Image (cartoon, rainbow, N blue to C red; front, side, top):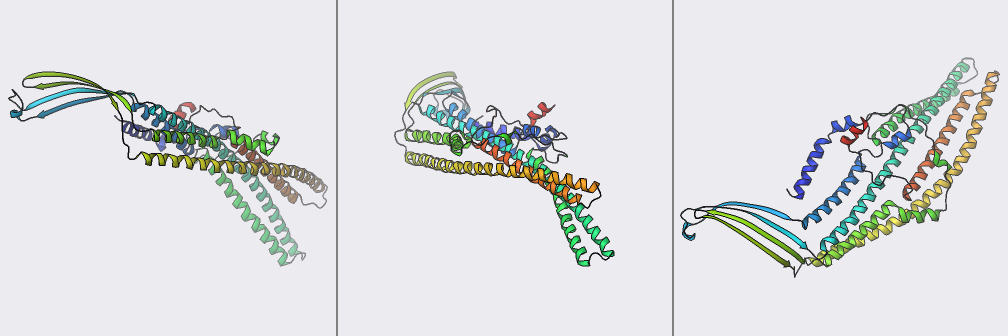
Length: 444
């Protein structure tokens, strides 16, 4: 069975094992309440983003095995039954003949060509490995972002739910005062319009709660498992100190996974150029044939061996191969230069965002303290039966909490993006994606 047939068989068996039904039954149920730590622990489970990168890595490994097999021992079995004209076979009286034989071929030495090809594919493997781990980091970023979106949707619902309640109270009071002649029809309809506006926003925020939970379930590869409650995470990244932007840019250019993956691709492409330029195919080969022949006059055995030095003197397509390989080098170098430029800009933009969000966070904390004190004052006046709008103060406090949380989550995501770009995220670099049939055993 050749390499292509084996690959097709593996794909067929894999597609049979990883069916939609088996994937669903192997996935664990989300806990209630769901924590960010648990959500992030699911980042390495089977997911299309990781499976695609893992397939690219496996493709490079398959290419390596294919190259190694080209210089391995090749054994062929040749069995044949044939007929000949009796007049052309000496001493033969019948036309039936048979043969059976083994043919052994081996490439002993190809003067460095295989070593060069293996070196090129090794660089490609390193590139695919880094791309895979970069995808793992992006998965964690997706999970964090989706998790925070749910928390913000819950706060927004609380805000609009309280606002709608306050709007209804104001509308109801306006109706009562109109009956007493203290409000006009215009005042009442204004209050009702405001209440209806808040009512629409309240139902929109309720739908957003479900949508964000559905998106989180999809990101966690748990479609249909909408988490009911989420725990508030400890945001340790808020204590980080912002270093100089030049230091972050330098670290990113040195350690960024995507950048280093491109560098390995360039080295692989450069080796391909050398292979194309020195591809006249000088090879030292050995061949052994052992045959047995059977005919009417008896059985005959024959063994032959040869050692040959093959030199492909003329290759008309060599110039085209060299040009194609050089094109890949130039393309990859241009991609690297562009990616490095974009990386520097990304670091600068995120650095500015972190700086601005840190200032916004200080302002949000002060505003939050103010609204808490104003609520306490309103509550005290309300208990003393002094005129006070307690509901309005509670709404303002909830809005301040929403803005504060939004700023915190944005800052945490900015810090994580900086960590990803500078390869400052600790991950097991030997880790592989957990396929559904494996994770079922672990979860049990």
